[in-house]
Length: 115
Length: 114
Image 1 (tube, each protein chain N blue to C red):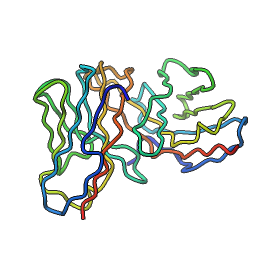
Image 2: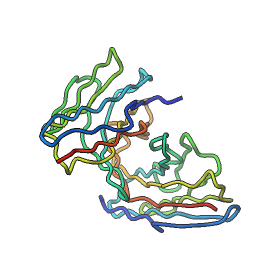
Image 3: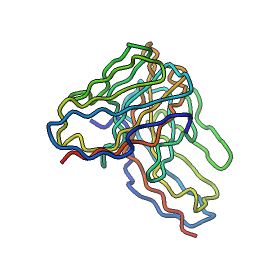
């Protein structure tokens, strides 16, 4: 049972436009959400995160929005650049009291930014 | 890449043979993790460690064992490799076990079991 879902396997946008990547989750215990970016033959790289007490977090061109009632989060990239072309993973974790930080990942979305 | 080295980077092995993957970190982080990445599944946690000699299972631990005898090294062993264990394996580290502390990943080991 996939607790974190990325329903769009791929997305193509023009350079300079907005990229919107979506993620849905089912576990209401999740209280911390992250986005990772992955290039081929490299490990995932942390991009941006958001706590469940917030609904928005911004870092330069990247903004993550969280809608807890809908159990949905999205990553906005504005403006998109060709170097943003990569696989983006959404991840979530829950604080069950143990200090382990086990992340649950979605299946990823391949973003292609066309020059 | 946050001082994480995975070895080997690529390995081809035969069904039934034992395989050990190594993760070495220079960050002195307490927490270490092994994930596998497969198409249609994203990354799934195999095992993790919260200190020297302290390890626990993740969501896909069957067929795998781990050991951590030093802070800097976390070993993943496939006792008897199967074709279903063909995957890309990623090691990750974290300095805090809190869930607001991002994991930092190595560059992965691509394992093929024939």
